[in-house]
Image (cartoon, rainbow over all chains, first blue to last red; front, side, top):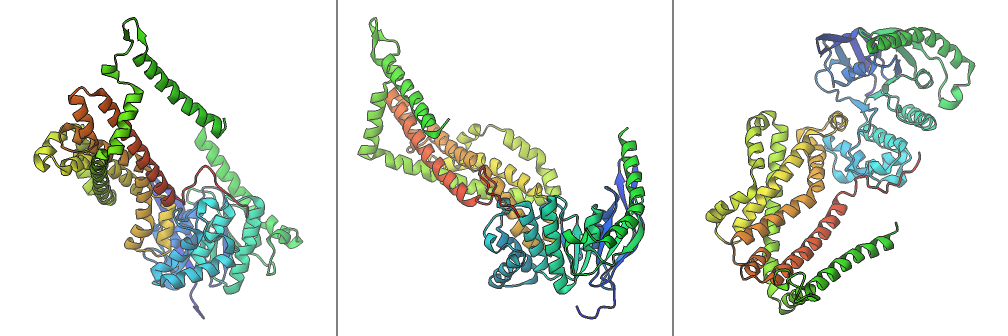
Length: 271
Length: 264
């Protein structure tokens, strides 16, 4: 990795349109977004604003209609091989044990199976699942499955982490535990992170910078807010700090308008 | 209802039916019993015949042949179904072109093929295997086809993001997904393999359980027919138990009724 002067992720003038019944729907319009190496950026925005779509562009899962994506200085074509992607839904292979799910992530890199299993064991230990290596995904709780998914991504040592509301389906306590685990792991080798969430408190407590997206259609980033809270952080405790509230207030002032717009549009569609 | 009560009730139903059958065929009402034993036989006679068949050892050869046919029909049908299911699921164009023919072939009652198979493959085991094959093939084919096409898009996207190439996707995602669907139809397809074997034997052969039943039928030996049916039923239960055991072993990863879920 060392000494990259390039941005980890740089989106330039990205627009994304979908063909829908009776026309074209522009989800995202002319959006620029830069994530520096080692930076933790969270994107917040109202439901359906296209923040996950933007993330999928950074992952190479969707090609933008216009604009370019640069990953560590080179233009992205096809899938982003430098990134690990943590999905909101369950993405583990249900027919493989926790250990096999993590170990298989090394196969594309040509790592021998024995070594892969050894490293997978080590990673499951790091995410606190040493005792669950032989469990199949359905035998694990939602939080445990997310831990396995995290290990599956981190074992490949990607330079960029893309996360699509990864802790969305979890209960409040589990979310905090997972948030702290993520920060612990991230602090060890500071990868660039692009984290999508609709939960502003989660965004502030995790990130170095929060980007606010406007309501769709033609959504774009309408504000960047640096989070000058110290590290290491504890997700639960940081929420009681006065500075946290100041930041929250500032961002919410912007976000609230967008949420209301999205809500009004949603109501309009229904009637 | 607890297990014991359920089991005793299940046994009670069987006993009542057997006793009823016994009474109706032995107790004379007027001059004759209500059910003529010539047409309905008697449970004890059937039992004695089954015992004799096993004791004298004549049945083993027939069982062996039926079993061989069943296994061959299942294995060839399953392999064919998996291969074609895969090819069709991954190749949209191939699937579209062959779609009407697949549907037509599947709609055809397979029994009408039995005489043709006998012409082609003779009266030995291969005409029965062919009949069983046509039955098993379509079940496995449709299941694998669906299994491959309905792989969760998230699992697929995740596997791609992990850097898997086509071959690795096939091995770690498509193949297990297809196998799941194949195994979920395992009971049905093994059952149909047996149907193919027995029906084939029944229609023309010189050995096997179907042949035994047909032979007894042609000389109005109703006891022999019932004995053949009882042996066939025992055979099916044994095979089904084995299939269930295999299934439990292979699908251990599937969520069952008893899931242990820890918090964390």
